[in-house]
Image (cartoon, rainbow, N blue to C red):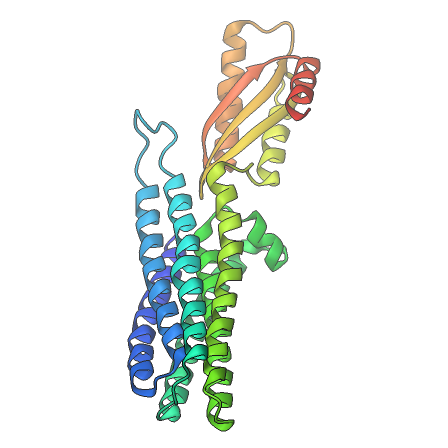
Length: 312
């Protein structure tokens, strides 16, 4: 796991912890529902960062007899738990709190405290968001943001980026809601802001859940990796045809691949063994994330027939 990813998570962790404490104090003093929802939001984000750090640590455990391909999916599991927490503890609680405030509105006290706290939170969340965005930009390359999110195999950076984006949107909603509730003397608008914050969190949670579920169940590796494996295999002098390759992402930086090759007829079993070792060595120099490469000798026709059967 890269140090930059850890920096992103730690920055978000300490920022959210400080913000949560300040928000709860402000919510207690001012009776603001939106500020209370924001405090809950920051607590959930803090817990999420702790779970991500735990998942990062667990995913780095070495392979063993029970887990021969390593523990890479530990990170995917805990990232999925994070998406559930954002929904259950963040979205649901915020919406419930907002409904309660609409049903039983309370007059807001000392609203200027909320403005100061929200300004402080926006600065802190903005700084964390910029750290996450900078890290995500390095990994996305020329891809668009949403396309990079869909194709990313490392959930740490995009999870923090999503959390911080939702947090910033929530802060501006809280700011507008508190301002209107104070200026128009309509405490009910504070509850409406709390509900809108919950909706933002729900959308964020659903997007995160959808992506991490796909990673947890098993997705193919990046198309460029598959193309490189086929190109290297086809260029080997002992290979007649590189038929195709199946890949599965086992972790953020762990891939298993199954390669179908048709070897030239004159080769002995020893020649084939040397060829397999040569191909594997070349591939792993370019893609060290491939933890296991399985090579199956078969004709192109057999490969196509079996793939046709899998897709039907």
